Picture 1 (cartoon, one colour):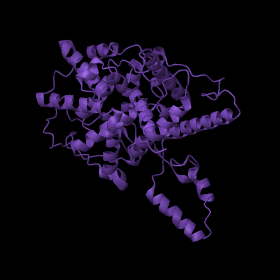
Picture 2: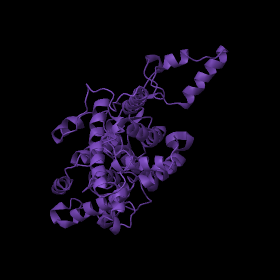
Picture 3: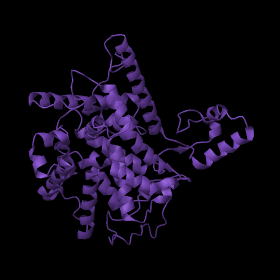
Length: 418
């Protein structure tokens, strides 16, 4: 644990990209990889070891042992920990812990605009992500007692380091849509069948999608936690906006504390980044959840309404055609309930209502209230609350500052659809 204590201490005391965020993202990837996923397959194993002839890595202490967690799942469920070799799984967890190490609380665009040393070192490309990975590995190499991987074979260590770096670099939003396009093409219309779990590149892509989702999913938490993380990110935004004003630079979108646009920021972030990412991950049948029987009146994961209500509202004159339509829907849709997916639907609707209320107030020439409910203020998350937050099993995901800044930039350039 020596290394992880040192790693934790290397996170700065800033409003959002701090040690609590790192812990939250680590918790999130653990949740996404260990919790039961309805219908996820289980690979055949031999002597408890995955076959992986592609990477030529021999099983070691942390090599390719199947996670014990996968052995306690119910029938009809699987988990990523049962499909991803332990070496790769451990690399994903370490990447989550490292992924924002020594974050300065400023965006890539700011570092490039101010010719920061990190931007010059990494040629303006994935500046923060390269810095996090390099600085975290420099820390690892700095003391012999930090090397918790000492028992790995050379080829295992080489692959482990490669996987950690690739996972961290995947959190750069400039690559976001490339990842999404590649993943959607891989999954296709057949869901998880497009993923070859015996292929190391396919597994790495899944791990990259996993850490990306973990890094940006404050909107996937319940309302109270979502608002707490939102408070942290906007405070960090405002600090950058203050520095931009001091330096005579244009204040970046959503970073001007004198003109807050909290609801628009969150609605845009969910619409353009978190929503599509969550949808792709869910379409691949990788999202933890539970099977539901439509007769139970459970929420439809696509609409947020009860299944039987949706059927009753079908306005089809021909009764036989209506029945046929419903049967077709059942064939092409997994009846699965996912709590975190429900949270993003609820949070998205909340922000849209706030935006509508603000627009209504503006027409009355009244001062807009960006939070919509002053009697229910949001409070910044504190470090002492970390243990309590980490116990929220269905609310495990976190935001990413750079992704929000990129959304703003893309919107201004009219690249993203409105």
